[in-house]
Amino acid sequence: MTKQIQKRTCLYSGEEFIPKRNNQVFANKYNRISFHNQINNKLRNELKQTNNQLMVNYKIGIELLSKEKTITIHREFLKGKGFDFRFFTNLTSNNDMKGTAYQVYDISFEKIDENNYLISKL
Image (cartoon, rainbow, N blue to C red; front, side, top):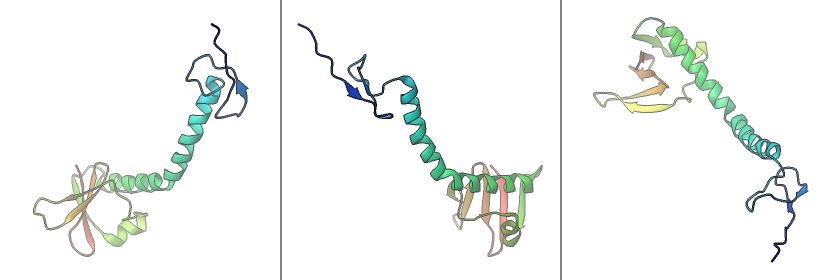
């Protein structure tokens, strides 16, 4: 009995090829890599603006803390530096459960009152 080999169409390039395995869907490894890179690049581009603002917020926290463990900063000062309060990586309740702390990676921004924030390194 001879097995009849069916040609397939590559998912990436659209070219026809004879598969070497029964589950092969790309004509070659370069097409497979390019296909997955294309998908991942699209996702990275969609998240680019969010990730960039997270990095800006993180760098502002690191710069303000420098060598100190905690510091109190006015809200307008943070805004002037380019801090955007809509972007954070984690939200936690503080110890006495009276408020919340916004975290950007390992930097915590806890609202003390209407205009001041306590910034600390976790």
